[in-house]
Length: 178
Image 1 (spheres, rainbow, N blue to C red):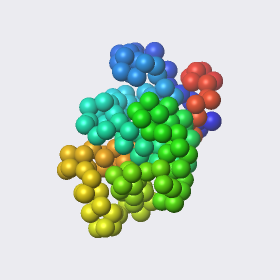
Image 2 (spheres, rainbow, N blue to C red):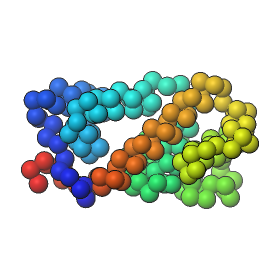
Image 3 (cartoon, rainbow, N blue to C red):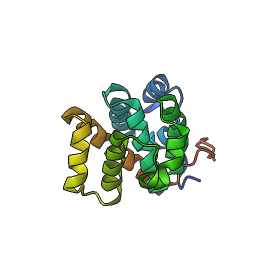
Image 4 (cartoon, helix red, strand yellow):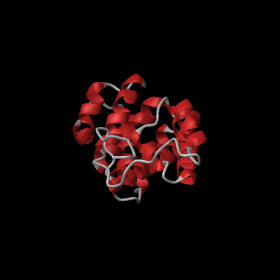
């Protein structure tokens, strides 16, 4: 359960932004209902995450694979709930999602996916990426893809930390009057 109430999206200072969120995301998810407490943060967040998810050239399956891995590593259930269905639509196999907790011992990942997961794990667990991990990544991705992958992993670490610090849960009632 969230530690503070969700914002009222109908407030005059957030109504236009709330409409934009609905237009871009289909609805006001719990995350955005919380972010609307600060219109500048919500607006920046929306622009940044929209760029990551909809404007980058990084293949959707790789993007969603690392988003779900970040959620797993950080214990961010809400993030995983939101992205597992997207990952499946983007072509990530259920067997791959199931194998993420012990992906290194699994045989369901191609060399490119293994390099991407090793990079994601390093960025998330230790922040510092070993030269060998980066060298392996360079064998599979060009500079643009590396920048987009790095931004994706960084962005979703930010998302999971925000979600978990405030206690956002998809079962929460988003009514600000609660």
